[in-house]
Image (cartoon, rainbow, N blue to C red):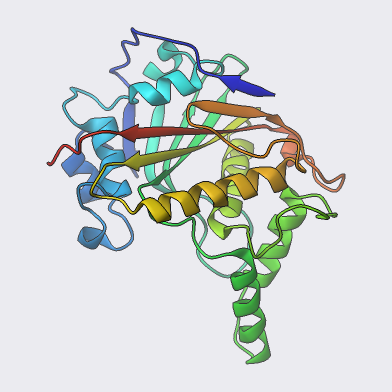
Length: 279
């Protein structure tokens, strides 16, 4: 099912809370101080996804609150009042297995009541940064480490992710040389976080920031191709593209060996564009 967003003009969301650990985040500067991106100040720049996500949720507001495009996207699943009393965690690590290596890092994780029950929302922010390496590259690097006798959980993790998210047959569908690894781990982390909160609904949202003169149009196109390849593989070709402002779902597991913990999965995309506001 494809759910398109309706029109909304009044939201009134201004009481949600963001935390890192036990410390509350109330501003853009709090976000950077408490939950900076992995490379710190090198990634914290106007026009880049880490800072723009923080600005979208915190800048010019008494309390953190969802940007309007986000609220419109979530309308079929979560209303403004439900988001008003919610809690979120920037730069939130989510365990998806017990293997070696760092767990996925979600740019912003949210848990709230929803129209279909408790709902987990994980946001992946992008300007023109890629969705990570291709799955084939992760596979080859892991095999090389194993051949060298080096410890790694990457190969087993990748195989588990593909088994859990994809059907066994990929005839005519994008292969591992077209699937970006971060989309695999982000989706898996969304499902895992929903399971840990016993939430029946999980939503993985890509929030793209596109400001003329601050993004590479070629890289934006590559990201669109990557996301569409992932959607096509995840839905066994029944859906070939994910448009801005649309939620897909509920999606069903394509393999009889996995039930996604009984969680209903939705995937959506929103975009913030226009003139860049410098902080």
